[in-house]
Amino acid sequence: MPKRVQISIAMQNEVGALCRLCGVLARAKVNIGGLSIEDCTDEGFVRLIVDQPKEAEKTLKTAKIPYRAQEVLVLDLENQPGALQHVSARLAEAGINIQYAYGTADLSGRGGALVLRVSDLERACDLLEGAKGQADPAAG
Image (cartoon, rainbow, N blue to C red):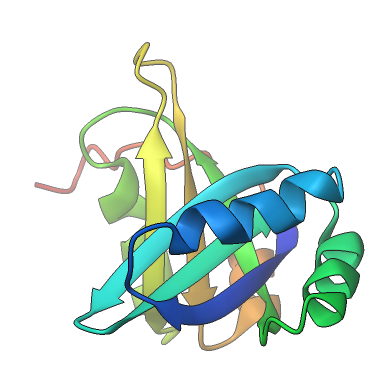
């Protein structure tokens, strides 16, 4: 179960803000593999999964961009009805809360990725080890 470091940044919700952030990371050769942006009127909250989290943190610190780093789960899911239900049911049955999630499906229909921030990361990893988000035939 891949645990990954997520970098979270609060930034102004204005023209060019994302461009500037991406430019800082690109100049440091940090690739963004996952992205979520939540808007809150004047501010946005950006969550990033990057290929080099330590380099990203160093770069953001040098650029004086406040950030928070925390571990999240990144799951490969089958792109089929019930895949997310299966994962969320296993976590719920174990009393593990999903605090937030974001993801995408491969547009070719082959699969996708889901990023989860959960209340108990280690237990969730153990519980979902090897799970590919297969639909539960009994669900629905």
